[in-house]
Amino acid sequence: MALKGIDIFKLTPKTNCKDCSQPTCMAFAMKVAQGVAQIEQCPHMSPDALDALSEATAPPMKAFKIGVAGGEYALGGETVLFRHDKTFVSKPLYAVCATPDAADTAIAEACKVDYERIGERMCVELIYLEYAGDKAAFAEAAKKAADSGKTLVLATDDADAAKEALSAVADAKPVLNGANPSNLDAFAALAKEYGVPLGVTADSLDALHDAVQALEKAEVKDIVIDVGAASVKSAFENAVQIRRSALKSEDRSFGYPSLVNVAKLAPGDERMQSALASLFTLKYGSIIVMEGMGYAQALPLYGLRQNIYTDPQKPMTVEVGNYPINGADENSICALTVDFALTYFIISGEVERSGVPTNLLIPDAGGYSVLTAWAAGKLSAGSIAKFIKEESIEDKIKNRNLLIPGKVAVLKGELEENLPGWNIVVAPNEAISLVKFLKEFQAAA
Image (tube, rainbow, N blue to C red; front, side, top):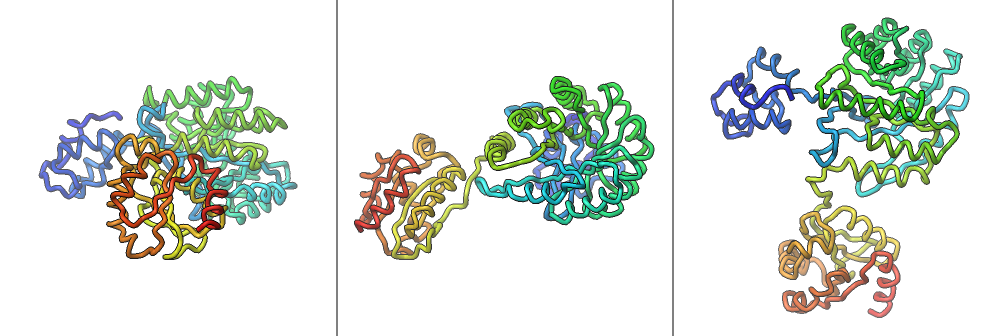
């Protein structure tokens, strides 16, 4: 960020009015300098000051959105090279290739991967439609891809083909990927006319830098930098150098999201494409194009992305309360686990699989796993008893069987003292054993 807190403070109204939710103008300026507040949050900032500060305080990588409601995704906005420095902002998007003659099959296959992991939808976000020489077929296939609900990337360096396709799907706000040093004027005009982000590539980083600057001079606002597909080595070097130049050298001409086509880097090799997609998820692909995406590829890849693009300073939690599963009612048993989202979804899944009606109780455990919460004092007999009282569990549920995680069996005695009348049952250590345990417990009850 170009300006320090004191530089920003000099342009504030200095009234300490607190309308920005900060106690003083100096505190507000420091928050803006740190990137945790926006200049626009001060309603009294003069237009001249806003103009002077907006560009200087913007992230070194421009942030913008592609697609439309229901399939709209953010790109860019990154401020650090490494997740442990702060956090990553916009997760990479995965695209699958399609050609006009095989568009129906490619779109249908892409739509098959669609599931939920820890409260987040996992699916193929983009269709990367490649021009194959027939303009009418290209435009027709673009319509089909847009109608599928997927966000579209139009891949062609033919300006006439691009224009025909854009005229058919402009409302879907696709990405047009095909600008290069030989066609910059025509593609810049198309991007401006249809209001779409423009992908650009070149044979070298110097030529790519010059091409981006030319697009900026042509007032193209949203740019995606295609790192090229000459080799894995060059693509990786380009992706890293572009990101380092933007964040470390504050080179705004390289401060745009990157597109990496691993389908071209490893054609026909599904395993290598998966490996490369993992690599560029970490370093630093914003759009990653693959030949296809099945569950065998998606499960580890989306898991990796979710782990890396989750803010490490904010534990993933579920809301405190009672979650009735399998039609549980006031007469159903109670089971307790923590509010860490991954733990909740694993446990709830096994409980559902058992078919046993169960009230799954979730106290506030700080967003930690079971053992971590217990070691940190966030999960104790006292906190569980307090939760049951505050949530009026005893008024709502007549059944007095409470299953606790086996890893905190040490809490059984204290819980029996804190919850008189309850039968505290130690469940298995591992979630995989829950199905058998619950069925046997129900049969014995």
